[in-house]
Length: 134
Figure 1 (cartoon, rainbow, N blue to C red):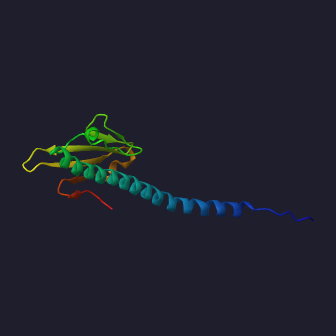
Figure 2 (cartoon, one colour; figure 1 turned 90 degrees about the horizontal axis):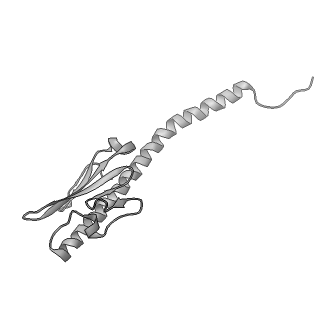
Figure 3 (cartoon, helix red, strand yellow; figure 1 turned 180 degrees about the horizontal axis):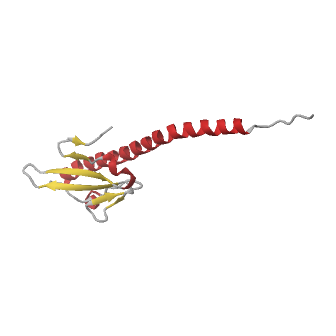
């Protein structure tokens, strides 16, 4: 009798089960890392806009609520349309200006879509950050 080589059905099923278990553990971790990366990108935009606000007040003697006035935007973000908003698929970012005295601003990132459970992020003219910053 000639013996054939190959995989048995049991060996194949064990391999499929192991791959399934690894995927069940790895996928949620991957999703969490993607969420953190998107949050980090929004934080970078908030900090950049805050820096632009500080430059703007030095030049114009007032804060602005317009990304268009600051000539600010970032790759992958649609900023300045409407002028007070900057957004991508995961966050809407707005600037609110307080006339004062003293004048101030708050820049807020509101999550949307798959990022919705992430919570709002904000930074104000005093440098105070709220939300889950990394």
